[in-house]
Image (tube, rainbow, N blue to C red; front, top):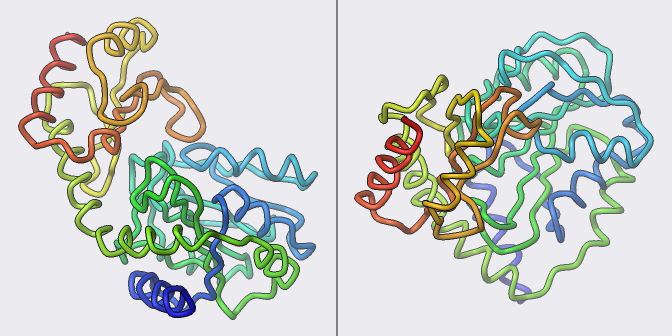
Length: 286
């Protein structure tokens, strides 16, 4: 066991863009709570949509002020004012659209603002993850799927000693680290498969306004999502979870009427089966 954790750290770091000090936590929510707990952080910037729901819940719990920054339908525009101490964002807005991670982090650094990026939906893709702090969930369903847990990476360039002390309290069982090693090794293949599945839906006749080659979920614009989902949930059962769909508008996806197809819940199915599901959705919606 003494060898597995250093080995795991090396494996994870090879997919990241900076030399992070890694902390393994029982959940990504606890990880974010620990970061924002630090007394050096009092004002928090977040995107107005497309983020992790904890972006809103945790500052409230800690009684810290958060400021919602307008986005381009979820995409963060890298122009900031020095009005907060840290800015939170996800690599993939709502799992739907790519954020310009490198530009965002460079602009934040120039303003003296700490950047925190949730990389859960893109792990293994080095186009993302340029922030001072990276956050990754390994719950379910996720790219790194252990059923629970996650990790936080903190660069040596910032000072949040209080947060690091809190993070160090989190202890994980040996079985978690062995599982995570396998997940890290298979992450690139899984990410590629999910993007291929998303592309199948994007090529359909469904009303899909945002087609991003790096997305792992697909938003379908629909004026009456309640009616559509009532039918879809009876006709289509995913491989994982109760429903393949997420109704919108909602903060952690997009604030437009419609629904999101969560392709990660189909992982492990053959392309032919995914195409059949896509065609079935088209028929029902039309």
